Figure 1 (cartoon, helix red, strand yellow):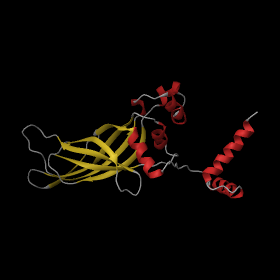
Figure 2 (cartoon, one colour):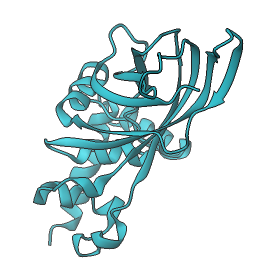
Figure 3 (tube, one colour):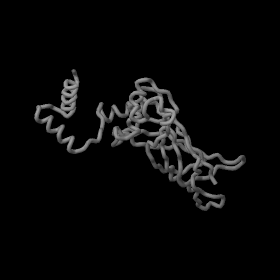
Figure 4 (cartoon, rainbow, N blue to C red):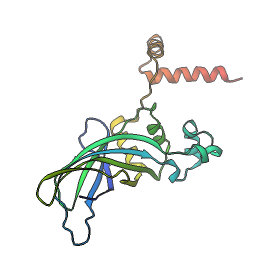
Length: 220
């Protein structure tokens, strides 16, 4: 039975994708017993859960301020800085003997209603600490050439530190200094009407005007 190991070895923006995506380079390899030839693997139906592990890095004061909505005040981070889910992805590993490097594409969102997006965008530099947890089914040949199946061991994982700049560069290319927030339709309609009533050219300009009015009212 093949004893497969998984290791993330790199990441890069996925080219020509319809949505912002990162492509992680995944090495799948077998660790056969001594004096035992590698097992011919027909395919692997791979599932992967990707978690963010925020406790595995340090934060600048500005980053701590931006992360208060996620983790509370820094004096509570000993209790609140816990791993959180980023996403689930799947992949099919083609036939191989010994090892193979495959692409693991991961869609990325700039929706600020998502905790992962808020976390990534709050970081100025350094790395994004990630943990990849693997599961799925292996299809392989036994010694008689018969096709067999086996589940991937539950303890297979790989840690990876994604440079923050890769994620920010990806978002700048696809989103062009724009963000995505979810608001109620009736609020959007009020902002849209305010834009029209005041002859403003964009919703950005309407929100800026509303903020100016709020600051004027707040000034004693």
